Image (cartoon, rainbow, N blue to C red; front, side):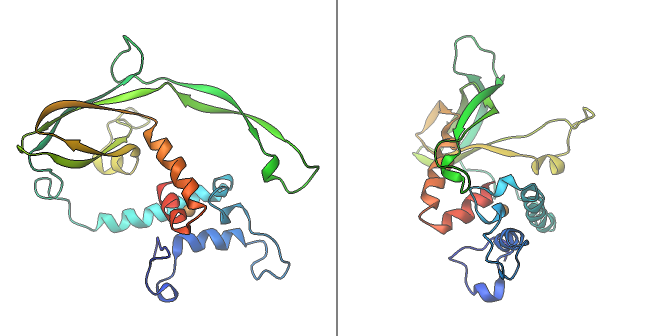
Length: 231
Ligand SMILES: [Cu+2]
């Protein structure tokens, strides 16, 4: 099994490829634990991204899914992907300031400071501050015009993805290549009353959801699998 969780049946038989890869790498310096070494950063979801092999391992897991999906028949866009009576008229994003152009978002570098004191188990006790520079973006909203022609209230899940249109030579991507480069920007449930109306959502919603999930994960290892699957 590639993405096992505590709910998976017969774990001894089906295994747990993604998570076991983390564990094997995390114990590669002391495989049979004869030196009683602690596990490396790949063994914990809060630190795994600090090891460069994290990205190689996740790419490998993604490729297994993509190889499998490539052998499946294409979805039928009428019967499997459409939502009867619901049509999206338009979608755009706009920064949360007056007179800003449509579909332009602003990113910039931001200096931050982090207290690493609680995460270090060597050296003197106390605060250890690290300064770092990270990518930030100006707040923006989505504006999605949706038409509900079904005559009844409907409920749906809105999922927004961002992906590059052109490759490094400026040539348009084929959809087959493009779809594996998509990043999920937001996901939320909506109630759609009959008629036509725009809906707007804050771009930070997804970030907040992830932060909440990470807090919950400390209490439940089920969330560990979910967060890893999201990364
Ligand atoms: Cu992983």
